[in-house]
Amino acid sequence: MEQKSDTFLANAATAMNDTAAAQRRDIMAAFTPIIRQQSIDGFSSYEPTRKHLKRVRQHTLNHLAHYLAEFETQALANGNHVHFARTPQELNSTVLDICQQHSARRIAKGKSMVTEETGLTAELEKAGLQVIETDLGEYIVQQAGETPSHIVGPALHKSADDVRQLFLDIHPLGERELEHTSDMVAEAREVLRTHFLQAEVGIIGANALIAENGYAMLVTNEGNGDLCANLPPVLVICTTIDRVLPRAEDATAMLRLLVRSATGQPQTCYTSFYSGPRRAQDQDGPVEVHIVLLDNERSDILDSEYRGILECLRCGACLNHCPIYQSVGGHAYGWVYQGPMGSVLTPLLTSLEQSAALPNACTACGRCEEVCPADIPLPAMLRDLRAREYTEKLTPARWRFGIAAHAWLAQRPRLYHSLSGIAVKLLRLLGRRKGYLRHLPFAGGWSSQRDFPAPQAATFMQQLHDKQRRERQRHEH
Image (cartoon, rainbow, N blue to C red):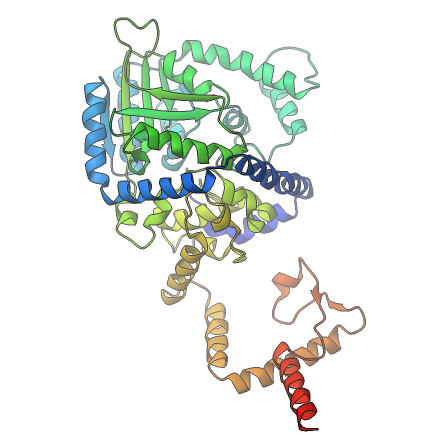
């Protein structure tokens, strides 16, 4: 998938002008935190599990080479083929080679952020293969020619009417109304059934890799992952090197946190562990299984101060609680990963120069760190990326000048207080009639979207000094 995160500000402006989509985001922002909180409140072991998983993930990353080697050994013993890809291009090439070795023309694909990251579908289609996304949300955005807007709910930006019209346009099934959501789901199931049965290769992701037994764990709510894995004769599992965990019990601990934070469920509808190709006594399952593990800068991230981002569970909780994501939606971020975790991960996987606007897409409210089940210090990482952006002179010169001027003033408290006092009086004078200012000098972009309350007659420090002066006078008398 081509990265266009450098256009964040333009994308955000466009998104905020789409009032219908903004209303849907407001609804999501209202109820998703409530659902998550209710689920967590009903899980008495949430904090102990969170702390346990934090220790396990840190230990695993500290010994990543060891656990990857153990996983590879066990996976090979189970009859799998294991491939390591350093770059997105290597992963795409590996998967294409597997498909061509089996003369495959039809691919049934499950939801996978990794293959979004590498642009796998587009590469397979260039080679003449038919690739059908089978997760309902992914299927909708694929058929609409769009990209996912949320790492968990790819089609959250689409309304029911959007989906209804899309299905009426693309499915040659004759006259029908699709009046209810259930009608649309049933139609998608009918159309996708043919693709499941005809596919020669199935491609899925993995939420975790288990070192001790070589298994891959996948969680879904639709069961499409199992159909992709078990119906085609060849299965390809694409994931990243940081998904490995030492033991099966660690994967289930992660599952308890992931699902509650992602959808508010105690568990997903389908949790599957894939061991390898079918055995002689098995009635179904793939004949051949390939596991492709992608690095793509993760080894470098592991050796950096941002290594904590590799502990991300991809639950989407930080997106659901982020005021910036709620205001602009996922497409504004311009690439695979959105919200706070995307604002950290995208610059690390691509370059800070290409995505310098993303670390600034933050109000510093801290909600992302508060709700993160992996306890990742996202605000600190975003601040550090902004500091790097400043030192590397990636921000516009006028912004750097403004920051430098503020820093210069902050080192001179008396001058700072004097100038801020003058500014407060001036702003109060400008907004005295309405009680607010619709246009702020030198801040047109900010005030174009919101009103600024007219300040009080004095700054906080001036009021504090006045109070202290009155108290001294009272004591003297």
